[in-house]
Image (cartoon, rainbow, N blue to C red):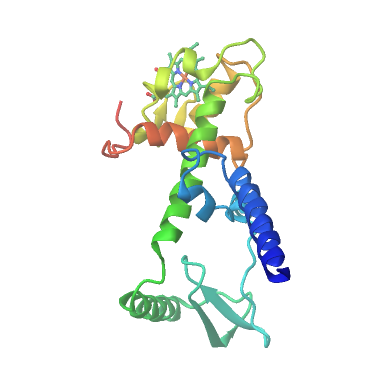
Length: 224
Ligand code: HEC
């Protein structure tokens, strides 16, 4: 009899925590899908995105040797005869780069440790950013506009933003500009807001939305 009560309580606790997970993860993807529950733990990733890109921890050697890390953020090499802060002589620099790439390719040959779940998380994070960009594109207040005009009023579905043509010379800026320079120009001009810092999360979101709308179009930097 007592065991049956314990079982009932356990089922109750499980049911309540299940609902909690459900509501936590219902942001964004199709409501009620399994994916929502599986991906409930991605908040730390989203928080990392708010961090300015330059502030990531650099690998350190305990004995003051130079440590180089590859762009993958994992492969590292300690250079025993070069001290931290020193510049590698050209020949040595090439040698280090070659050795690191050899190590990287060796690792790539082993089976990838990324799972289907990892890829779902990446996709969902990217889609969240695109959706945030879509929201900002339609919300003049959220990007600091002052006269009630938002981007979508002239660029429905981001039409005619041509992200694939950047960087290119823009006559209004009188220089070769990146897409983000043009986004800021448009925030300052028709929208009458203040330019966003280049590492502002809203800038990243706007770029994500604008480029996503043109996915599949071949890159053609400099095209007019
Ligand atoms: C009142 C209309 C209007 C609004 C609002 C507007 N734009 Fe534009 N935008 C234009 C026009 C017109 C051009 C073309 C300028 C040119 O020929 O270079 C343009 C150009 C651009 C370009 C460059 C396109 C290319 O072909 O290189 C981008 C990117 C862009 N806008 C983004 C935005 C964003 C982001 C917003 C909101 C912050 C915005 N625009 C708001 C009218 C507008």
